[in-house]
Length: 419
Ligand SMILES: CC(C)=CCC/C(C)=C/CC/C(C)=C/COP(=O)(O)OP(=O)(O)O
Ligand SMILES: [Zn+2]
Image 1: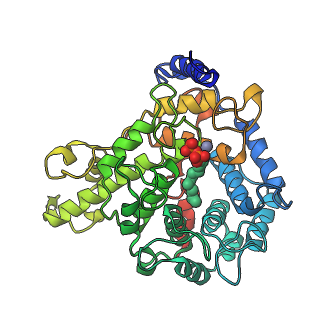
Image 2: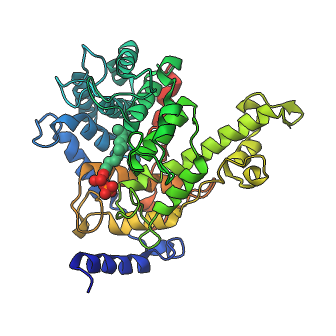
Image 3: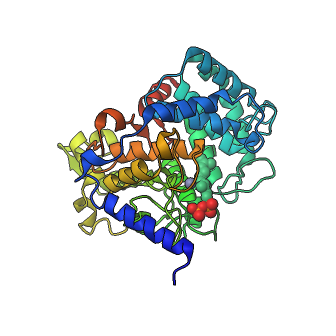
């Protein structure tokens, strides 16, 4: 006899199988995204920022990011009063002595909350948001946490080093304009040591491959421009196998259940893998003195758009034998992922907020990462296509930049102004 929980999982799987067999084929019948309800839930999270939290006191900068980013993905604009209050709150989170941001005012600087605060400020944008960031202090903070021998980063003074630290450091440095060779050196080598026999990336060398750390490791390498000795083919194989064939969502690790937040942590790796292929294509063309349009390739500008798109999307470039170690373009079922998020991750009974899976409660973290995953499934699914499952008028989301998980147009505006 199966145990109760095993039979409950079977029931869920059977329902999901019906729902997600072919999400694009039943395009009109997926649940509409309840954008207004989710936006109201996220605005509530920003309203609670000034209070001291019982359980999330050290994650208030994260709360700001989850809510500001979730609203931006939904295409909602913050009221002036709210944006000014959030910028002021994040300014109060700066750890003036160490540089970087703590999880709340007066708290010790931490790499994860430095990423969260920075990404929230990039999303908010504007001069006042920009003024909160002191580039030299951020660099000093990052370098104080760098382990020169391993290339890794401790997450806070006296804390542990892991792939999360590498990502938070690379992404913060990138968005604060201080990503130089001092900061990036050794990151590819460190992350490569965290890759396991399964293909995914663990938190630290010897750890179990996990979606959160896999995103962190891969994105850190992409930002550092250094993939070390990562086996991208094995990484892709592991990732593809994390998508539940029945549910359509992703699990975080082998033999675990799917969870809405991995829609981003695992799903976000696919566009990054495509770019890794791009980088390798470029390096190959440089090495072999290939010509495009009569010019020898010496940089990405020499590749016309067509060649770059080809590099990003076409398996043939990598299966000709010249790219033995590189992977074919990353493939996941973006339709099935959208179906899972829409039908299984929105709160019950029309309430706002998204969740891990049916039977669990909503929270701001899952709301942020389910929406991020839904956006990337719409914009980064099949090559070059924007495909929205369900009614486009309610379900279409703003595109995110998967390297930093900030909406693309806000990220581009911020980066253009960074000199
Ligand atoms: C930018 C930054 C700092 C990112 C952090 C990325 C990261 C490590 C995310 C993972 C978070 C998470 C839900 C872990 C759950 O593990 P679990 O063991 O409870 O869940 P499981 O059973 O699904 O593995
Ligand atoms: Zn989760």
